[in-house]
Length: 205
Image 1: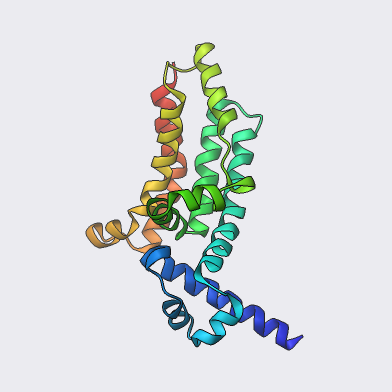
Image 2: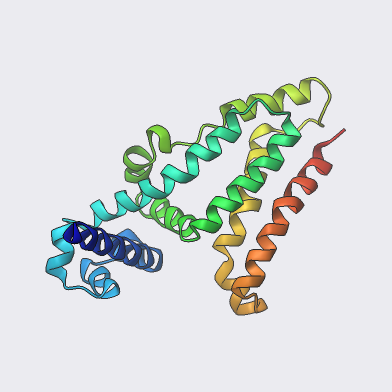
């Protein structure tokens, strides 16, 4: 029993170390020695738990995606009015990214470096966002005269970019504007309300 707990603790320490290294260097730039050093263990022990960095990457991403994308798909598929869905999307998305702040840069790094691998092997099944119902709902709202004519993909991109970008730009906000961790958290809490209010005001007829 003691050994199992120790093994689990070591594995978690390796995974947390790998997250930090992958965010800094990306999958292609990271080395197993970097991860071992970050975790404070020797390379042989690292290889005992994980054979290679690709295995580590997949486990980290699937763990985070397993929390993020099913929750987002619940919002996309929910039987809610469009404006309520926009509000819920912003709240859920920002909350989950706050719990996994490394995820946006992690995903963007891998898509830019190896899009075929990422999209075909890692981002599949339950990990794939499914916005089709939301897009259809936007189109229906346009047809019923609830919102002004707007290309549904543009509205979806507005939602994604306005919620995602602050997390990508967080180092810049900290360095150039002096936004500390507590201030950033409060800013994101405010954006849960600010983003839907702005978008709904822009599209409402």
